[in-house]
Amino acid sequence: MREVVDYLEFDKSGVCGFNQRKPGWSETVEKINIGALLKSADSAICEAVISWQQEERSHVDVHERQQQANHKAVARMRKKRLKG
Picture 1: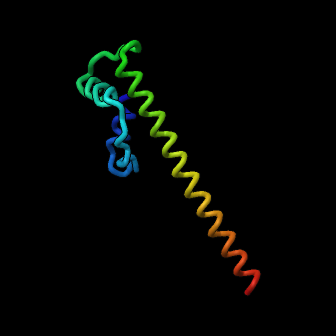
Picture 2: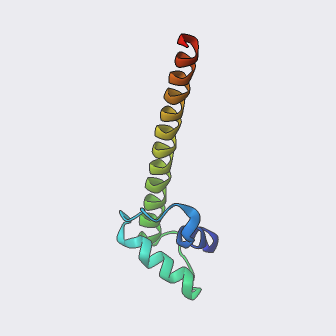
Picture 3: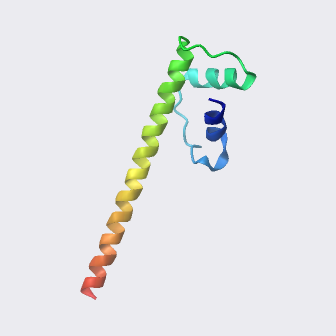
């Protein structure tokens, strides 16, 4: 879990826009940072997991939009070449 926190806090991870976290996220990160024991029954852990899943979905959506834009750009370039 420490690696996840390190990744999300790393400037170049691209996760800087992740600001819709549930309150349990901060609580869980704080526990990890101080080395506290994490318990699976802790509601903060559940909120942290939900927040992580939402972030992953958000990244997938962004990536898919970027791919669609790239494909459209390539299609336009090919069309131009065929005309010219």
